[in-house]
Every structure is written in structure tokens, then in C-alpha cells.
Image (cartoon, rainbow, N blue to C red; front, side, top):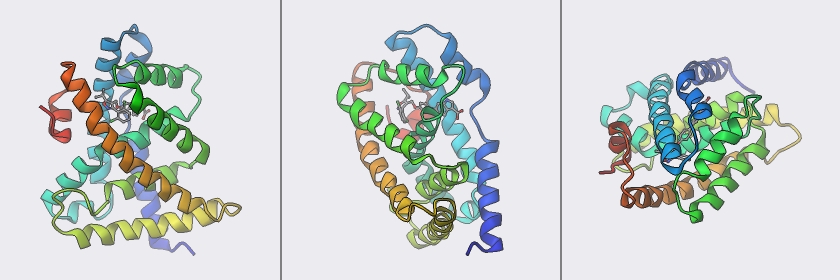
Length: 229
Ligand SMILES: CC(C)c1onc(-c2c(Cl)cccc2Cl)c1COc1ccc(-c2ccc3c(C(=O)O)c[nH]c3c2)cc1
């Protein structure tokens, strides 16, 4: 049974998740600019940079996050940014939007100069997220759980992060039972996506290297969070 405190936690996280979004002028540009590998890369870099800023603001609103050790807060953000962005872009791509935005975003990702070998796992992931038909609060909690992963590099107070993550896992488990009564395995399927995210994270390191070797430029924020350059 979901307790009063757990309901308050879901509400706080969902509000933060909905409050922090990429500004319209950034996402609109994706619909306006012309197509080319260079233009697609530049637009995706701009969107990714904006999404990192949104992610930082969202993370600060996760109850308990700001009471963690300061350096651990940074380590958690750096370690989870890519995975949180895979989740977020997956949620956007699984929504059909009237503006045809989803198709445009997918097209620009496919034609942004990354090598074929990453396309298949990436778009398989997008498909598997789409098939889950996650509710907004499940998406927000799954992103929170990804951010609160204790075994990121350089995290010192492993237990403190683990306690926070377990609180969120407990809430998500109850929510899944409540919202997907016909699918007893639904919670397990969500956690399976977190494992897939780790694999995509490893692919992403290689994606960055291949973009770097083709002399692609990233923004200072992305260089800092992804330790490139
Ligand atoms: C530096 C660039 C080239 C890069 O490197 N790796 C990846 C990359 C890729 Cl190519 C795939 C997955 C993850 C990453 Cl980091 C990227 C591009 O990353 C993103 C990040 C985030 C969005 C994204 C999020 C939200 C929304 C949204 C909404 O919320 O309303 C509307 N439009 C959205 C777009 C898209 C692409």
C-alpha cells in the first residue's frame, strides 16, 4: 500500500519532472533548420546541452539529493547524464506529435554522423521503451532511480545514495503494481531497461570518440559532464 509520504514523494518528483523542460525555441529549431550531418549534429548538441541544464535543475528537486555530499552530487550527475538523456529522448520519440517532431528528431539522430553499429542498439532501446507505455510518474521515477545509482565512478558515500535509491525503487514497485495490475512483471521489465541503459552508456563513450576523431565540437557543458577534450 502506498503511504502518505510516498504519495508526497511521487508528487514532488513528478512536479519537478514536468516543471523542467527544454525551452520551446530550442526544440522548435529542430523543426526549422535544414538537414545535413553537420546541421543535425549542431542541433543535437544544442538540444543535449539544454537537456543537461534541465537535468541539473530536475536533480536538485529530488528529495534528499541536496543533502548528499556535494562531490557525490556531481559524480551522480556526470555518471547518469547520458542514461537520463537516453530515457528522456526515448520518451519523446515514443510520443506521436502532430508537428511531426518525433520523426524529425529521429531523422536527425540517424543522420548525425554516428556510425551504424550504435544505431541498432539505440533504436531497439527506443522501441522497447515505447512498448512499455510508461506513465509520466513512472518515467520521472525511473529517471530519478537512474540518477541515484550508487556505483557511479568517484561516488564516496555509496550507502547514502543506495538508501535514497532504495526509497525510490520501493515507491516505483508499488506504483507499478497499482498501475499495471495485469502485468505482474512490469516493474521487473522497467528495471531491465536500466541494464540496457548501462550498455548504451558504454556505446556512447565510443560514439563520442568517433565524433571527436571527425573533429566534431561539443559545448563546454557537454565537455565537462562527459570528460571529453
Ligand atoms: C551532443 C549530441 C550530438 C549528442 O551526443 N549524444 C547524444 C545522445 C543521443 Cl544521439 C541519443 C541519446 C542520448 C544522447 Cl546523450 C546526443 C544528442 O542527445 C540528445 C539529448 C536530448 C534530446 C532531447 C531531449 C528532450 C526533448 C524534448 C522534450 O523534453 O520536450 C523535445 N526534444 C527533446 C530532445 C535529444 C538528443
